Length: 305
Image 1 (cartoon, one colour):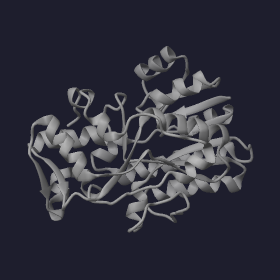
Image 2 (cartoon, rainbow, N blue to C red):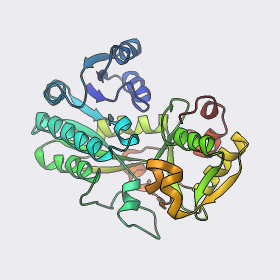
Image 3 (cartoon, rainbow, N blue to C red):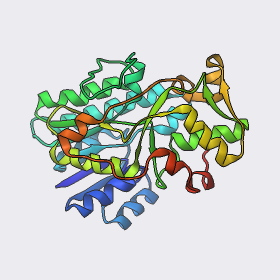
Image 4 (cartoon, rainbow, N blue to C red):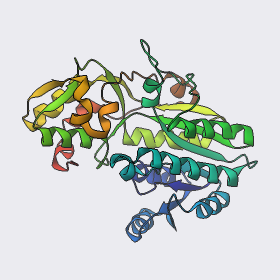
């Protein structure tokens, strides 16, 4: 099928585009710049110039495609503190593409985050694909995408782990945590660091998006999770060891000052199951886990502060 992919030249997009092409699909990628367009063309995809603010362009591209995968998000705005604006613009883009696909039966695969499960108050157990969230920042987009199923769209949503890792990752949360450790001269965790974060390798995530596009039932919630819960203290230990820095606890009251925009998330316990996703799509993560990947040089040769 001809697949319109937003965020096609980004972290996950750079793995998804070849994954789709190698499995017989054509790709039209949204490109914000000449550089992004050139990257897509070099990979064998078509480039559609535009951005998430070009709602008419998104509608047109979605309508002309056989399916849509939405990966793009205004990460720069989020990291600069304009999180609510980035969320609002993402929802507008999703709604525009949904309008174009309504009644078509075509697939739309969107992106959410497992951290929203922890923020919803799930405690004492793993979050599952059966956990339905009802609303709030970023969750409104999840609700809208799942709701597309009632509008004649074969929609699915991938809740991604906060740590999507590989040598293709140049700006993700792993790099940000490493950059914070270098800036503060300490690799930190909150409290006793026993809270857990899930993780998934970029290539495993890309395969999940392809499988969702090809066969996920309408209204599916999917979990892009391989490591279901890595203790945050263990992550901090690896970062500290690689950088030769002390590893220390940060008081919960100081988390915002120490971790910046991540301060609201670093203490969350986000143990997350992937059982339903594996059963539904036959998806099995095959690449190395987070801790093994963090031991490689690529995460410490290219640090994002």
